[in-house]
Image (cartoon, rainbow, N blue to C red; front, top):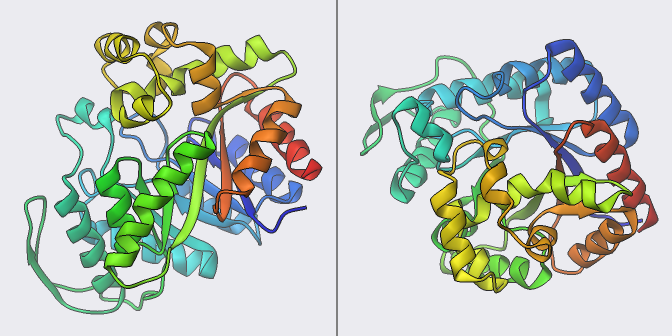
Length: 329
């Protein structure tokens, strides 16, 4: 067995009762973390679901994966995170990032790096009980302060894929949520960027939580088909990884033209352009033997937790298969 933690990432697409059943099962199976995405209009509110999960479980670490400073004012994020921490205690985690292309449905776009950094700083100051005045490009605060006691040491994890965001996360975050696929060389490249930021800030590397998306199925063609949609996310949103793994630039261009980068479930047409080799380097897409080998490789590159976002029609089957793979290590 490994000392690396493991977790599950869910989208709030299930009814509340079904979600709570899943949370209980995830804890009973032995997972350490449960993360919930926040993605404009696609899914239910993560803070409310995480609060319910905190009452339904006793051990799971519970976090957003991730909120952003665009759809939620940083002060309201501080309130929501502080409330979750009051309910969940030291199991609560705030995951935050710049936002993704689904923001376009709201007439918005992802935050710039400086806005994300300023939001993180403001949230931390508010949680620490400070009065905050700030005039940032994306938000303003005028002598703002929480009027209730909050947990000042609430861990803040920053979602990162591009080099500048990885460096920022290394410099300021308690943890980094890596979105870079599974290829060990690519993961090491991302970790080097995190380390650069940490070194410039004179601090050690933060906790590294890698997120892997996909399907585990003994029918490998079915697993590959189920994981194609998330693989199409990389050419549109994080094309640097396409270059790092040697994807034909013409395929990258064609995928970007075919897929606007909204919810990855909408990427079926673009995903069909991707070779199997790329899909299996960027997503969990195979049988138990293949995934066990990939997990063993990830153990060696320096991550602290590996978290699976299951795709497809039978997400519980992938969660259970991930557990089986983990127990082989």
